[in-house]
Amino acid sequence: MIVGNNVIYPIRYAKKDVPVTAARLRKAGGFRADLIRRHGPEPMQQAFDLGLEELEEEHVHPDLALLAPELRLIIVAYACSMEQGVMRVEWGSAELRREDRYLIWHHHEPLLPPDITRAA
Image (cartoon, rainbow, N blue to C red; front, side):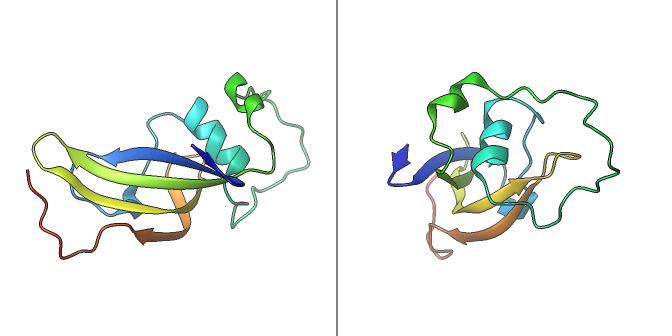
C-alpha cells in the first residue's frame, strides 16, 4: 500500500513467537528482497569495495519500476500461526543483509501492546 511517500509492506517473518530481530527472508532475490534494497534505508555498514566491478549483473524485479524511486519502505513484520494466531506485530525500517538474508532493523516498534492476550 502506498501512503504519501511511503510504501507499507507486510512480511510474515515467523510461525512461532520470536523477536522481529530474528526476521530473515527465504530468498535473497525476488520482489521482497529487491523492494527492501531499493526503498529501504541506506545500509549502516557499506559493502567492502575491492575496486572490482560486479561479477554478477543485478536483475531487479520488473514490478518495482512501477514505484517512484523516492518512496520510503515501512515494513510491517508479524509472527503468526494457524494455532496461535498473531503473536507479534512490529513496524519500522530495515535493510537486507545480502549474505544471510537477515533484516537489520534501523528502527522498529511494536504495534500491539505486550500485555494483550491473544486468542488462538
